[in-house]
Picture 1 (cartoon, rainbow, N blue to C red):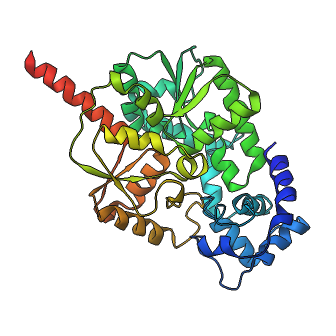
Picture 2 (picture 1 turned 180 degrees about the vertical axis):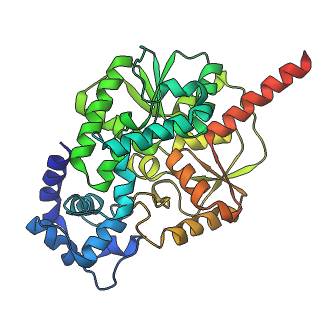
Picture 3 (picture 1 turned 135 degrees about the vertical axis):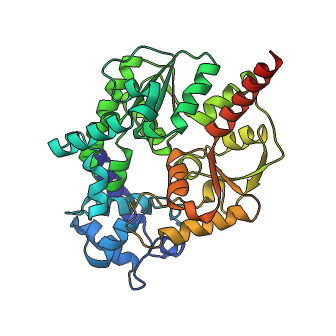
Length: 372
């Protein structure tokens, strides 16, 4: 499915390229200064694997989409580069390491490593342990889908908020129920197809009205399933869902300013940039970064650390935050993990909306305890 769709799009888009180089001008990743648009187009036209500096560029691409709005005829250069990536015959070790545990048919060694990961995380997973690669799923109004990020502490806060709201919900997470979008962004189209079909089957067991997720890539996959299968569920980010329940939550507005980092998939590609700002206005002050909304700067995750310039670009983003705040706020758990783990030496607090809402609930509970 994915490969056929991509091939069809490339056939449609390729004749529209006018070779103006605007896409390369705004591209934030490393690229050889001698590389031209025609060099990018040649392996697409010949349907051959990219080589040399073109292959290097395709592997460095972060699929941020900055190239699209500047193109005069609106060519989807991001997807044309993804097509190049999909035709690469062998991937570097950092790409291979990412999918080693996250593939539909992992090796016995990979299965063993994942089993160790699950067992070692049993204590931190707590009541989410049984929701990690679950054998049984109940029908529920809301499906919270953290996907591979179920091991992140943020997920406990999401379920605590859902409990506070007394929602009828189910949780689905773990590597076997991966959404497949990261594999798609790697260019592994067949692998992505399998994961997406498998996730659809999991979803149908729950038959939810809403599916909420903290992950921008999972959100993209859920939108794809809804369109592909013509199913009724409504995919939402957790930010969007909790904003719809704001009147039921004990939100406390502080005077603190947060530098809000827009996600590429949520803000630039799907233009869902208003909900987080409305919700933040109920929790604190919005400090708009220089690059925001559909012009947001990417977290540089989806070249899988193939590009040495990643750190420099993330550092620049952090410096934007520091101009007006000591805290970066995200509504995408991928961005959250990237900045929190890879930039921990930069002395900047990284939080998610789930953190802020959970803190409000905790404060309300503390007040009630004190009054008793």
